[in-house]
Image 1 (cartoon, helix red, strand yellow):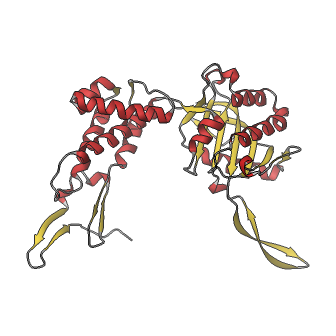
Image 2: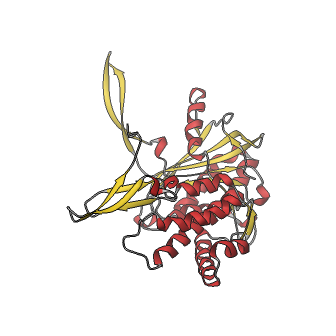
Image 3: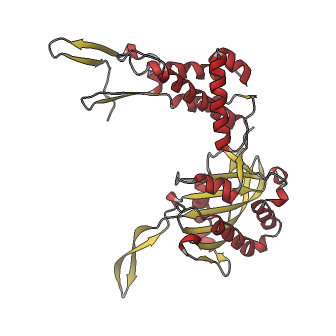
Length: 358
């Protein structure tokens, strides 16, 4: 079952800051000499900004092939939770680890903020959290100030809290299982560096995670299979979506997922099952862990997967028609296709009751 995490009571009082360069470009690492104290008036605002990116994220945990007491980030987090006064020393060690791991040429230098969060509500119990945020870009902003009795406008550079590039929140919950960790990487490039190399975490394979992964795998697999089959060049594009809808129909109609049952009812043939197994193995390799063959289905995540099933009609005249997922199952009710003899061209007629484009 997913945790219920609330940040409404959370507070923080100090930060460890660092400028993390790129070692292969001879860029230095600079870390705080002392804790950067947060004034009482700024604590609520800053804490809210720090935690905003972590809402509605899936859980991760630290993972080590031998034992968690050999996992550097797990050891550092445990030490900070046990002795908050050591935040400066251990926070600088976290910055040093990030600097040492930043050896891929595509990794950008950036500013690092590390803070201890108090009173995060996890399933009704208050616990600590260790927040690590990295910003890889500075943005310009305008500031109006008073000088010599008049107002002045100045342009400055700073961090946009809404565009932080990477972050993680280590919650002091279930430490023996590797803690409960929320993490994100908005850069989209070398995300394995942040998740695997620096943090050393793997997703928690709970019901929402497994439902999401298997549903997305099923949609991607059956859509690819449909594209590989011979089809009429004039066949409407939503026909390729029907297999995906059928696959998701399995998840909608069941309370529990069974891989064997899915193979029998959806894939149906040994050849298709073997191809899906290969597809799943590749996803598991990329993810760094094996997925369970049986689990409770999360209906919320099935609905999320359904929203991704859509069709696009791309025409050589420069026109594109996008069909929402709800329409891909019954397009004939509002779309008519034909051929105009006078123009010598094909046409698509769209029926509607009202223009709601605004």
